[in-house]
Amino acid sequence: MRKRKRTGWRRVINGINISTFLVVVFIGAPLYWLIASSFKTPVNIGASPPQLFPNPVSGANYSQAFNQYNFGQYFINSLIVTVLATALVLILGTLAGYALGRLPMRGKFTLMVSLLIISVFPAIAVIAPLYTLLKDLGWLNSYQGLIIPYTAFNLPFAIWILRNYMLGIPKEMEETGRIDGAGPLRTVWSIILPMALPGIFTAAIFCFTACWTEFLMALTFNSANNFKTIPVGIATFGTALEVPFGPIFAASVVAVVPIGILVFIFRKFVISGLTSGAVKG
Amino acid sequence: MTTISTPAEQVPVSAPLVGRPDVNRKRMARLGWSFSAPALALIAAVTIFPIVYSVIMSLSNVTVTGNGIALNGFTWSNYSTVLSNPTWHYALGFTLIYTLITVVVELILGTAIALVLQRLTAGRGWMMALLLIPWSMITVINAQLWAYIYQGTYGVATYLFGIQNILGTSTPAIIGLMIADIWKTTPFVAIIVLAGLVMLPGDIYEAAEVDGSSGWSTFWRITVPLLRPTLALAVLFRVLQAFGLFDLPWVMTNGGPGTATTSLAILGYKAMFQNLHFGTGAAVATTTALLVLLGCLLSLRTFRVQVGKEN
Image (spheres, rainbow over the protein chains, first blue to last red):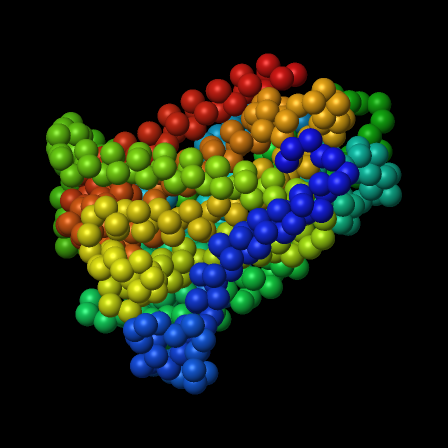
């Protein structure tokens, strides 16, 4: 990064390429190890020295994860909880974000700051009261016992994101709706919603990722085998004596794929969500 | 709301907003509250109520009964037990040092990666996609992956570096956890910093180049000060997250060996759900939350002051 002389640009580009390569290795090597190990045979996964390439390539870990370790059930549980919680967050969050962004309410600022504070509260501080509450309701080991807390914990961030998008929509848009005789819900649905779509995507992908990866509450509330989510399942595959890394990695690859695809498709929105605070600042 | 007032209210909402701004404003405010009520009620029920209850629990004599817990009167004893407990002192120190080291390393590495990606002419989109994989990964998977890498007899780290029993020895276990954390969250910092870099005005750099400023001094004198709000935000996010550290040590070391990797969250969780000491557990959880809140307010304050200066 010396003074850029024309003659030296080739060297600079090379330096950048080497650094980029190092970044790819730093991030890619552990990922490669995860995928490669998932295709090793049970014997080879414990081989010393470790095998760089799985030889022979084996699908045994994948069938074991599903047949012996009940991973299919965990996957379905995660999917149900994540999809429903995300849907609820989007419905409630869009309405609240619209109200807090565009309607004249008193104490809006206080509300937004309170939401911000709630969203940084560590989950450990609420886990015991929530546990007793869910126990009293008979909702331990149930879908709603995770969906409702996940919805509530992801709402503050979603409301913030959506409110910021709502603020940017021109005022005339709603008035067009009113002149056409549309009611308030209809105005939100047919005029505001399409314009806030990027914000909704951002909130959706963040909420989905948070629910898909959440561990502490899932571990505490849904410990029965039929209601475990993927993180709890993967954490409890083994016994104290032996950790079956092969099936764990096979399950991990299956768990990473859907979220990886979603994040890849919506990467623009993920990045805008990650940096929305920076833009505000 | 009575049945008589309902139709009367629906008609004017759909009417054009001309003439009576005061009436409309009131109606709009009411609409706002009814739109946000479901979300706010749910947040209050599932987060605010437990927070308050947790504080009450930490100030009560909690006994475990057959079908739950019972609170029997006020006491400070949970807090005095926790504050005088050497395990809590250790957990507090461990969590603070862990947070400090991981956040500093992630900030340096993340900024370096962002600077590299900023100069990348082709394939930046693919690099961003690669960076997002660790970010979106389940922490438990990250933990299992690194537990395998560190495994005592056939782990690849054991093979490459010849260190035996990494997760069974205190200091290597702590460093091992930090590396796993740094791998997963550095990309997050890199993305935030890159977004900040992209928004910096280019003409300042041209001026610096004309003045003969070297790369290093341009970085310290121009990039870092301009980037400060972005860096502050990244630090804030990371500190809050790191301070709640739970998933990684729970899976990789279960807080061990001994209590070497017992974070505040692990300590609180074990007190409550393994030893059924709900009072002291709640005291650990509440003090952790207070520390997080304090840290958050302090950083927000510093952050705002800096933004104010720059404007």
